[in-house]
Image (cartoon, rainbow, N blue to C red; front, side):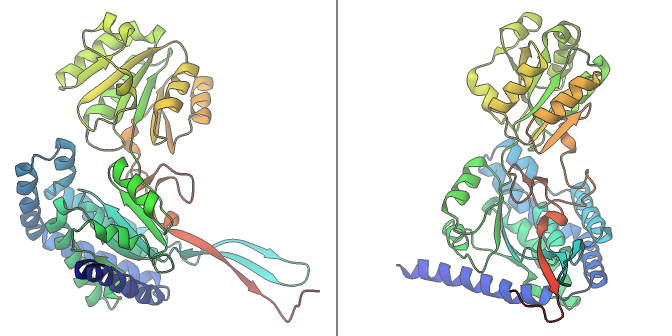
Length: 422
């Protein structure tokens, strides 16, 4: 092994060791103290917003020079509005119930042993993410409020932004007498760092990767630590035969156009044959006005001129102003299409038929399933979680936007008076 690799391994091991030590101290911190600290973090980030924007502009300039994809550049931006949204999210997290120590259930056994099932932190969480510097603040606030410790490894494209936010967070921790190593940021962009971090089972309790599907798959394949993946968002909206035209148009537009470079944006529009002629021409016209490139099947192209959709389009997460459109014969066909091509993230039906709505809600196996609303609401802040550490497409251990409760596990506390098993 080269000296360089030995040094990288030592760096990661030392970070993990510091995290384990901080984790032991975090379990005893009172809720009120955690809330006060989060408010201090939010206030500090607000006060230093100009410094954050300055560092972010360094990253933005490099991203433009490197011709990074538009979706990645969009996620990289930290303007005044996004910094405010970030700090508002931290304050909202501070206002939420602390899940740690909550009693989930109790049992009194016939032998007199009293059992409590109690929420506890996951422990040491490693987060590997690309592009989004707001994740630094979101993850830090959620982990602190749930008494977890977090190791953050962002992408090289956002290094300056992440470090600016991270240093301000750690300054607030030091001022609040909370272990500074409860939040650590790896400032080394060497990709081998990730490989070493994911080998530290017994020190790191869970890895949460956020980014491209390729990156998530790579982390999952090589990890000795359990992984909760924030996967791709190949989201669908299905306009049923009873859909209200106004709702169908405004919801579909919002799902595609409001912010196309994010994982909860619609990528495929499915339309029932009986609703297509009534709704599609006007909807496509509005999509075109918004700059959307549309790709449709043969039936769609009879109603509106657009590019021919290929099989690959149905399984592509564009993260851009591109939309695939397909006409289906039934709700059953729409559900089958989503089952075949979807990513189990967020899917919606537009309908006025209650039975149709319930069928869609029950049979579409996605983390978030909507009736008459935009998929853009799959977001921790929008769902009342304050922020999110990621959106899990998995079923174990968490699913959908991961807030405070999703960052806890549980243990059993058993109280006896001398009982022995016979």
